[in-house]
Image (cartoon, rainbow over all chains, first blue to last red):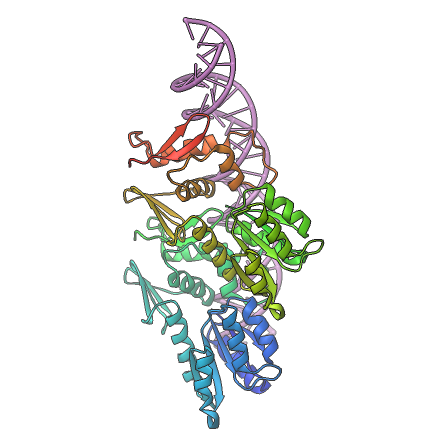
Length: 224
Length: 224
DNA sequence: AAATATACTTACGGGTCGCGAACAAACATG
DNA sequence: CATGTTTGTTCGCGACCCGTAAGTATATTT
């Protein structure tokens, strides 16, 4: 999952960067509104965290202009505690949630997770698809009661697939959501991870939980 | 489905080319207005994506002159962000939708898909014809609940036929919509694909879902 | 009925794409 | 700093898909 963070206080910016990285997100950063707007229109983020008091272009405008251009990604705004009225204006501008500074890391993470879930139409933190069960809180994947040990990136791939069942997910799409800005799109990492996942999910090779559609992408098998 | 892209920024042009190719469209390119106008009057595109700021002949003129010559194909115009007022003039000139640069790839694809659907009078992403059901999101075809595995080109042929039921579709028409400019029209690929489709759709040969009208083309059987 | 045109079938080659194995690099851990 | 794990690259093999071409069948015309 890929997140945009727009915040001008550089201390807080790096803090958010490391925090989100630690929790497995890919992060792009902006320290002013112009840049934030550019990034959010150019890349498919799963969440954007935007401070209201940004230089060059304030957070409200970033959101409004992004929404004008039909950017659908969930937006979480940050406001100073003594400016809580701003939350109303922010939500009007098209934000989805807000948080007043200062905040607990856990609080932020929880909101982010909630937004991602809501966006994918999953109210529940446990995503199921046939015998597959993915608990997004504990990051555990089980297949037919058998629990699997996934590495961080294996988890990311699986997570994205489970969030988009019944859909053909191209390798580019996966790459764009799992890595940040500058990553070589011609790499074959995705193929490698799909391979590793298949081996773990289905060592004997009779279930075929991940289907390949030549030239188009991957899809979770519907008959499991 | 075949698309014309008219854009003078060569970076963006190639980006659009690859993006659309990745998603299974045939693409013709123009980097100036004159060429764009020539191509759009000469070929049956399913969508045209036209930048307003084209050299030699601007996007407005391309659209106006094309409409004068009764070119009916849906047009999506691209405008710079700070020129978003142009959208009004563009829509007046005969465009069907607009998008401001920069934009999300996903956004563009969504618009293109919507235009194609709208043009064929299909509001719904699932096209049905008798026992045939084609989901344009997952690219899955089912016939009487039985799901078929189609290859990329088999899908394209089927898609075009389903978008034009009750109509005789000639081989040339199919070729023109499925391939781009330089493709040998004397080839018999279409016949081959029709054959492959028939075998998959109707292995026993009693339904005859695709009829041949000798000398004129093919049509989906109306009594299914 | 023969000749011709059109469509269908089949088989094959070229090329692309995806997969797996092995290796290298980056990172984490003690 | 040494060791083990995770991540990402390279490369060769194999499978699949596309398009061609040649031969066969079926319709249409003469």
